[in-house]
Length: 400
Image 1 (tube, rainbow, N blue to C red):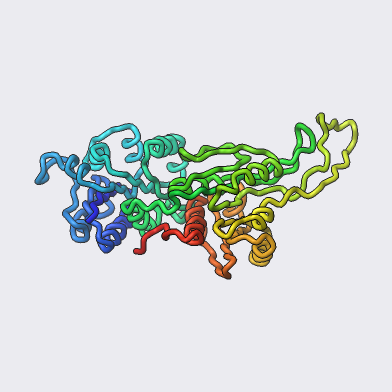
Image 2: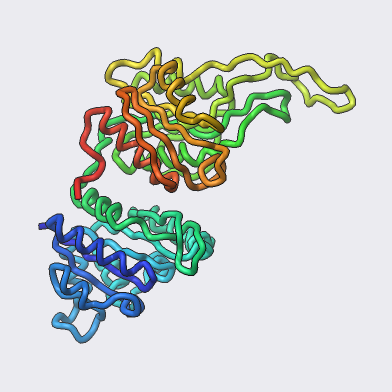
């Protein structure tokens, strides 16, 4: 039976950790709860003692064991902290151990999963983001937070990930499930720039956040990832980044990697048109309004759909502003791809340059799935789960 230490920090979301505990026990996991002093202002240790596999612990001292953090840390197959507050993340990143939970985190060599939950301003603070980046570099797994209603009546990023999703992630980590191990995934990201002159270009508002999220999640699922991108954002270790600017450069880079790819996910917003001739020098205003003649760019997605082998999967993205389902279905058919991910980019919470998205997933098999509002990393997980299924691999998450 796998052993999990469940750390619970002080925050309004602490009550959700009760559901995480129950789901893990029901799934056959031995759960050892640790509640911080602040957590006990929100939930009781007795509740966890009744539901978990052993009594909840709340202190380094006064218990039946002289060094509980060592036993818990050494015996754990996984340590999960839900919710993980800004305070806990800061202590863990700095290597500070001043209570049972922080001491256990430093006393374990098991994988660690932290599930942040806090108000939006706290989550977005530079110190918290730096601590999260530090923990990620050290191999700590992070789940969430989600965007939604928060304590206090407002909404934003910082909501604890859904308990079912946390339990899914725990079981995934315990199983060592890396369903894309041995697979090569090519991802495109960002908006292309088509030169008018050395200064100006035809482009779009794509930030590349969705494509970068897909690359990172694919790497965490075990894939060898090639990210062809126009954006300058950080990526997880192991992701091979190929930087391009124009649609033609992106086409050439993707087609070079395509023969070795098991899947290509075309999340980039590729320009449909480019200036037929770019001026060699900056066009001066005094010369009058120039005539910019456009021509079509190479249709990368159509080229992939036409060239793909039966064992390859191609995923397209459709950024629409109206009749989303109709346009996405047409694009799915004409491009001959396996899955089309469509979203309304005119929506303020799911368009370009934001951290959230809601999408319609249309499969070549006739399947259709609409997602709720998710972070782009969460949507990446949904898309890649479909990719795994299309490749004939295992489901990304074990059933709960």
